[in-house]
Structures are given as structure tokens and as C-alpha cells.
Image 1 (cartoon, one colour):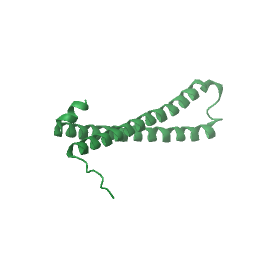
Image 2 (image 1 turned 180 degrees about the horizontal axis):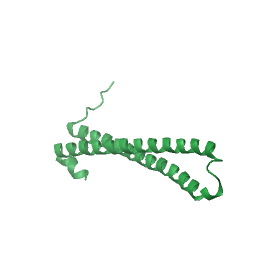
Image 3 (image 1 turned 90 degrees about the horizontal axis):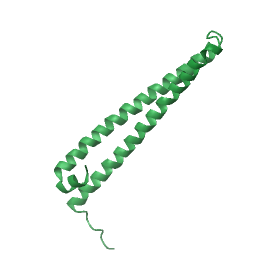
Length: 111
């Protein structure tokens, strides 16, 4: 069997950079998902406020409370996803800066 060529020192830098960029893209998609989830409860609540004159709050309280609880849960989930994604993005940016400083060729490719 023939042996696979061993990676050179430079290719390890590029592989690390590609991995960090892929992880950053994943964090950005989580950020996009979190902001999308955040919009859903806001639109539901704005619809409830816009139609508030059509009903009496006391009569629909048994429906309103579960809707508000679900909206609150979605807001908490979206804030968690957004904060987590931002922390990861900043972390990957710091790691990419370290890679740029360590390899001048890589620094020219990644802005």
C-alpha cells in the first residue's frame, strides 16, 4: 500500500483557518435562526394588541395566558441563541486573528 502524503506545515494553517471559518458560518446561521425566532412572538403580540378591541380580556384569559407563556419561552430561546452565537463569533474572530499573526501568507488571504 502506498502512503498518503503528510501535510506540510503550511497546509495545517490553512486547514485550521477553513475549520474556524466553517464554525463561524455555523454561528452566523444560529444567529440568523435566533433573530427569526425572536420576530415570531413579536408579531403574535402585535396582532393581539391590534385586535384587543374585538374581545374582552377576561373572557379570553384562558387562551391568552398560554399564548403569552409560549411567546415568553420563544423570546428566551431566541435571546439565548443570539447571545451564544455572538460569543462564538467573537471567539472564532480572535482565533482567526491569532492564525493571521502566526502565518503571513494566511494573513494576506483572510481580511
